[in-house]
Length: 318
Figure 1 (spheres, rainbow, N blue to C red):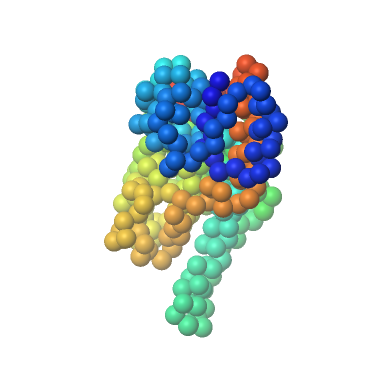
Figure 2: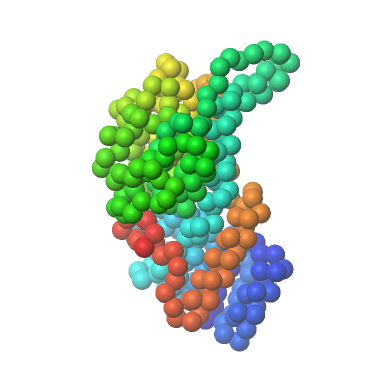
């Protein structure tokens, strides 16, 4: 078998892989920029993310291991029939949930406004702030990322409500659990609404104008999933007219956000360029490497892979 690995690996990871695969298969270490077409077409497995168009004719391919949590680019018949697609669920929860908590503190304590003061050399009091303790936090999507965020907010004294698609089991860190069909029943109660959703037909446009304006007056919206879950123009309106207190966006629609878009100028919009995950936190990289190696071991031994994606729904199979 031929295994193509596109993730940049450090020496310790390469050593682990070499020990695991010795005399069992051929390993080719490349980058997305340097991998040869013949290597793609001859690969039994690819670990890493390639442009989908390069995989269409990879007839030998049996398994694609994404280095991301989102795999929507590979759905809809992009991959040859029968290819198993896996992601790295479990790798990003720590990094992204800490980013989310940091943005809540920033917005609630107006640190972004004081940074604006600093840039203008202004000694200026920006007025009252908000508290997390005693607030109601609604997390839509209780996977690795959303679950870690809800757990942290619970530890900070918030009342936590979770929204899931199907699973009715309630984790200890969730005070109240509802299914997605009941989202609108709990939405007006939430001081903070956090979206940690993949890009699927169900999530696209989930927070449209009507739903944004169904949020509690003075609420804060956080989105770290996919930008197209939120109507950007409606969100701008809700921030500008005072319906919402603030928004933290690590993802936008469109993305990248055009330099002339009005969202950049909205004072209580905190925008980061889709950086809460990736490899910015060392632990995230280590988690991804561990998932890669575990799944590679399973693949070579003919065992069931972890984090298999349902090609119809785009969600991870349980």
